Amino acid sequence: MEYPDAVIAKAKRMAKLAERVEAGEPWREVSAELGITISGEQVAKLRAKYELGGKSWEALLDGRYGHDVKAHSALRAWLYERKSQDASLRASQLVKEIIEKFDVELSIGHINHLLRKQGLTAAPGRPAKAVESRDEADAREEETASEENAGLFFHGGSQASPGGQRDD
Image (cartoon, helix red, strand yellow):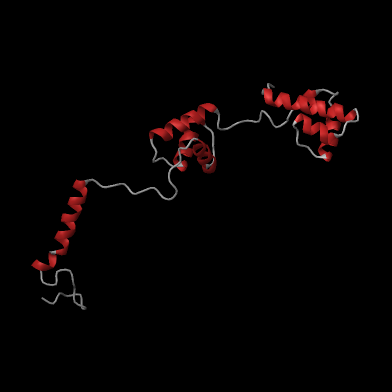
């Protein structure tokens, strides 16, 4: 497995710490000099791990590095581009599209986290309702006005008598 330079450098500093503490130097001074924040209990575990690994810095490589990354770079690039193209998209819709396109399931929270890091999140709250066009608004007003004026032509137009009969 290939490790980043920073992970390798940290393992080498930890190995130096273990060697110098074993030689009798105080761990607090050595850790401060090497820029390592570590407790006395952790020093004991570090030394044991170092000795079991054949006194090699490779034994001290961070074991967490290299875990699978669901949101790989191609997926993130697609996600950022997709959200840039359509700002009205919500994470729930993006979850569905990612499953279809990449066969990877991410949580809504993780998608929002990725978008937030890029400054692509929408304002909090529900999305605004779609704005109706001017023609649609005028047509709706005409329809409402004609219903309101129905009583002018038909006396008691929309009111029925208690017996179900109109009292005209």
